[in-house]
Length: 276
Image 1: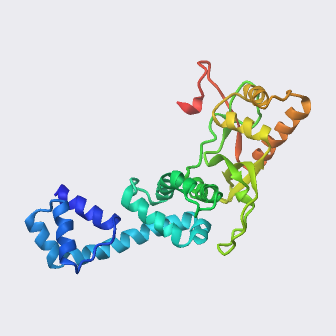
Image 2: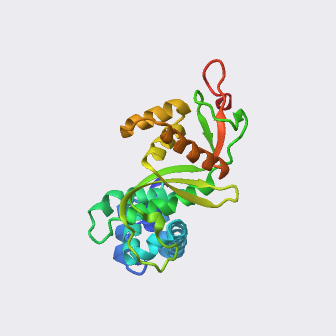
Image 3: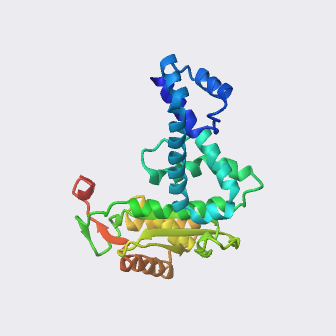
C-alpha cells in the first residue's frame, strides 16, 4: 500500500506522466514497486482517473498561492509556474491547511530567488508582504481579560493576536494594489507594523527605527520601561523627553486603531494571569 501511495504522490506532485506512453507508465510503476494487482488496475483506467485528480490537486494548491500573493504571480508570469512546479516536485506541501501552502512555497523559494537573475531583487519582499495578509486574517481574536487600558512602565503591553512586525529592503507597501502594475519599489530599508483592524481589514504602518525597536521588544513581552531603555540603547540614542513623547504617541495611535489593548497585569508570582 505504501508503494502505491508513493506512486500517487509522485504522479500528483511530480513531472507530468504521459498516460498513453506504456514504457513511461511501466517505468513509473516499477520505480515505486507497485504490486502487480494495483499496477493492472492503474493500467486499466485507474491512471486516467488519477490524472484528473492530479489536475484538481495542483489547481487547488496554485489557486491558494495566487490568492495570497496575486501581484507576485502576475509579475513573475511563467517563471512563477516554473518555481511552483519545482516546489511541488522537490518538496511538496507538508501542511494540512491551504492557507499555509504559500509560506511553505516562499520558504522553498527563498534561496533560489536570491541567486536567480531572472527574479527581481524585491520579489521576495513583495511576496512576504502580500502573504502576511492571509496569516493575519486567520489569527484568533485575543482575550482582553486581565488587561487594563492604562499603560505602566513595569508591565508588558498586550497587543491583539493579529499583528506582525516586518522588515524589508524595499518599500513594497507603497506599490499599487493593481495586478497589472509593474512599477519597481524604491530600494530602502523599511520596518512595517501589520495588524488586523476591528473592521477586519489588514493595515500596515511604516515605523521609525525607534518605534520598530520598541515594538519588537514589546511584542516579545518586555515591560514597557525596559523596552524603552533597551530600544534607545540599541540605536545608541539618549532616551530624552522628545523620544519618550514620540514613543507614547505611537502607542496611543496603535491603541486608537485597536491594535494595542493595554497593560497586561502580572500576578505576585511574576507571570500574567492571562497566561494561566
